[in-house]
Image (tube, one colour):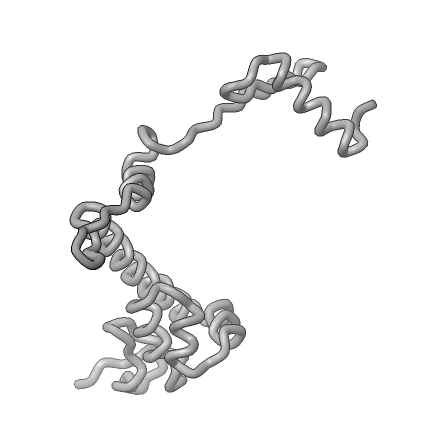
Length: 160
């Protein structure tokens, strides 16, 4: 006995994309679009490969939950590939002519992504309302922070 797709009919063999079933989508562009998104992690490039407009895929993602899920799954795979390539370039470099160039920038981005508590720039704000507003910005004195806030409030027309 064959499986049903929920409407009493057997599933359409052509409606699967990388193991993800797109039930209501019977569009021939869905598979090439999702394959392109998986490979490139870029909607514009995936649309170009599938020969479809970006506005249509964004509309369908909004209207079709299964397609939206498949889109996110494909994008996650594509982004994982980018992370693997960034790590390879950061650790092993890229050969140019006779030398190997390493990317400190990629190393920094990877460290920030995987250890944000250690490597991310952190800004701490402590705001309390007691009739007055106190703003503390890391790296600035309380007077500098208050002057900055007062300037912003004047610019917005909220203070004199």
